[in-house]
Length: 149
Image (tube, rainbow, N blue to C red; front, side, top):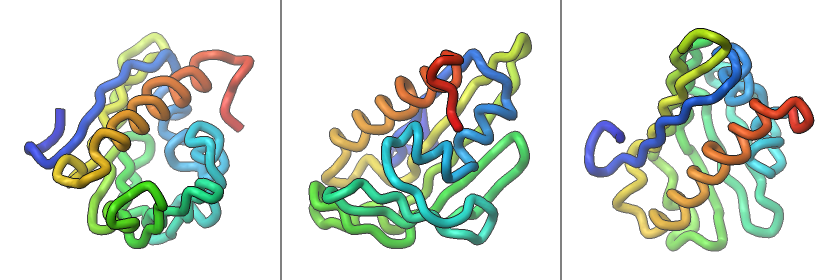
């Protein structure tokens, strides 16, 4: 899935209402929870969130689009990740999240990291997105014992 061969995409079905899934990807506190990182900054259009991974580095994501509760888009504006070569290789890429209500409190999340496939981090990043969205986010939304903040 993705718009072209340079994009990486995931399609997930989550047993949670669309608004809850949207907020888990809009609210910096919730993002910190499922991404297992520290997130500073705001989650509204034009604001930038700094996602810090401890000694592993950080990524700045500007919120470029919020269509409540249907879509979110982030743009990477700065980055210093020690495991990447170069450490700022996401700069200029975009991440889009589209949310489709499926009825009965279920949501289809369509995620695309635009421009990810040509980067050196592709294997690490595909595994990371698959884990954090497909496992951590999904589990935290579906299991009341691990509910997002």
